[in-house]
Amino acid sequence: MRYSQHDQEIKETITSYVQNIRVPELNLRLQPTRGRVLKRVTSWAALAIVVFIAAAFIPADDVWSFYQQVFVNERSQRVASMDHVLQRAPFQVWAPEGELIELQDLGADATYSVLSKYIWKETREIVVMQNAGTSIPPATHTAFWEGARILDDNVIIQGQRAVMYETPVIDEKGAVLGWSRKLYVILNGTALVIFGSGGSELSQKELIEIGESLRPVTP
Amino acid sequence: MQERLISRLQKQEDIAVTTLVEEYSPALYRYIYCLVQDAEATADCVQETLLKAYIALPRLSDESQVASWLFTIATNVAKNYLRRHRIIRWVRLDWLPIYRQSHEPEVLQQEFVGQILAQLPLDDRVCLVLHYWRGLSCREISMVIRKRETAVRKLLERARKRFRALCEYHYNNSDKEADDAL
Image 1 (cartoon, helix red, strand yellow):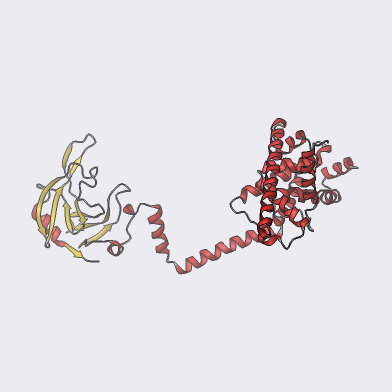
Image 2 (cartoon, each protein chain N blue to C red):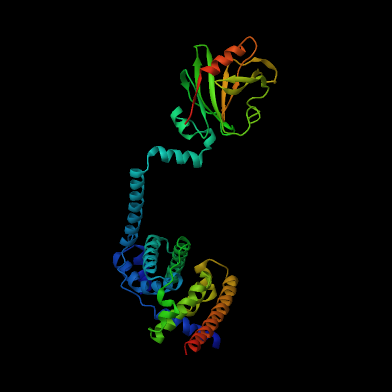
C-alpha cells in the first residue's frame, strides 16, 4: 500500500505507537476471568451488606411508610390504626366512640381519607373521614358529595362549630332517590362537619347526639 | 499451513485453539488497547474476543479471513465495553503535565499518541489503527465495522484530519508549556 507524505507520517506515528504497546502476560483461559467474577461477587456482596445493615437499623414500618409516601399517593393510603392517624394528623382529631368495623380509603383523587367506620348504637353506620384540603366538603370533592345540601350550619357540638349536610342517594340517571342512611363525619381542621341523612331518617337531635358521642383527641 | 490450522480450529482442537491464541492475542491486545486505553479492560476484552471466536469457530466459512474476523469480534467487544463503561472514564495521573518531566521522551511520545487517539471517536480510531497499522483497505475495514466502503473512506479521511489537527494542537501547546517553564 502506498501512502502520501502526510499519510506516511501518520502511519509511522500510529505503527510506532501500536508496536510499543507493552503486551503483558495475558494468561488467557476460555472461561470468565477471575477478576470479572470477583468484581461481580464483590458488587453483590456489597449490596447484600448494605441491605442487611439497612434492615437492621431501619424499622420495616418506616421503609413501608417511605414507600407509601414516595410511590403511593399519601392522601389515599390505608391507615393501620387510629393511633397511626393521631401521630400524623397536624390538627385536632376527632375519634368516635363505637365499634371499629372497617378501615378503607376513598381513592387517589380524594382530598380526604376514610379513617374508620363505626356502628353507632347498633343502628347507624358512621364513616369518619379526615379532610386534607383547606376548604370543607363538599367543595373539596364534589363528585362524591354531589347533591349534598346543608342541613344545619349553626350547630355546636362539644363546644365546636359543626356543619351538617345530608347526602342524596342518586341513581344511574342522576335522579335523587332519597337521602343516605350513612353518616359521614369529616374531620376538617378543628371544625366538625357531619354529612348525614335528614328528614325522617335521622333527626337533627340524633345527629347532635352522635356528634356528642365523638370524643376530641389532641395528638 | 493456515488452511490446516483453520480446519483444525473448526473442529475446536485444543492445540489449534492454543495456536490461534498465541498467534493473535498480542495483536488483538494492541488493537483493543488503542480503543479502550486501559490495560486491565483490554485483557478482559481480549479474552472475551477469543472466547466468542472459539464459540463461533464452527461457523467460520471463509478460511482466508481469520484475522479480519477476529478484529471484527474485537471491535464489537471493545464497543460493548465502552458502551457499558462510558459513564466513568479514568484519566491516568501520569498524563498530566506535572508528571511528565520524570518520563523518557519515548514514553512521552507513546502517551501523547495514546491521548490523541483517546480523543477521537471510536470509529475514527478503528479506521486509523486498522488502516495504518494492520494495512487493511477501506473495503476490508468496511467488513470489520459493517459499514459501506464509501462511508469508511469518508470516515478515514475525517479521522486523518482530526488526528493531524489534534497532533498540531498538542504539539503547539506543549511548546508553549515548555516556553512557560523556561
